[in-house]
Image 1: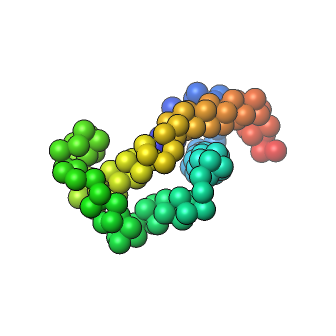
Image 2 (image 1 turned 120 degrees about the vertical axis):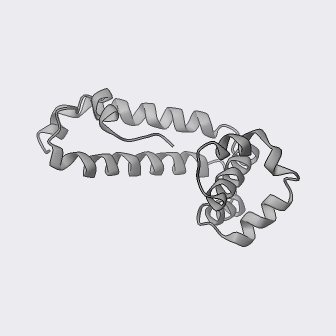
Image 3 (image 1 turned 180 degrees about the horizontal axis):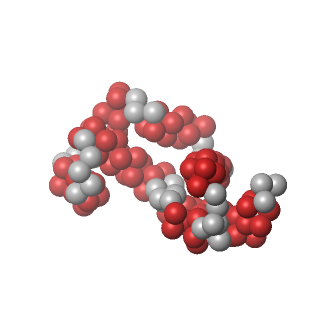
Length: 136
């Protein structure tokens, strides 16, 4: 996922935001991005797909294991190998891998949804930066 930090604030014209407001605004921006992505992705999914994806995100081990069993020799998969380089725990890598594979199969346009949602959020924030800085 996208990193919300001082560089993000600079990109949207909020580099001068008071320090005591930065983290709460960054948290808000990340939440807004997640909501927008979720809404766009779920619009093209069945109820069963949404339920399964929620289980994956929530780390439901039975669901993750069931999907993993259908992926064969997943430890040699390119996506899995890339995730290994992040240095996360095995459980995190497996969940991230299953999530990526599930998205590739069930929502192949998810990368574009993320990019479009992020661009829209940045545009909206940039257009309202003066009001944001004024606390409106």
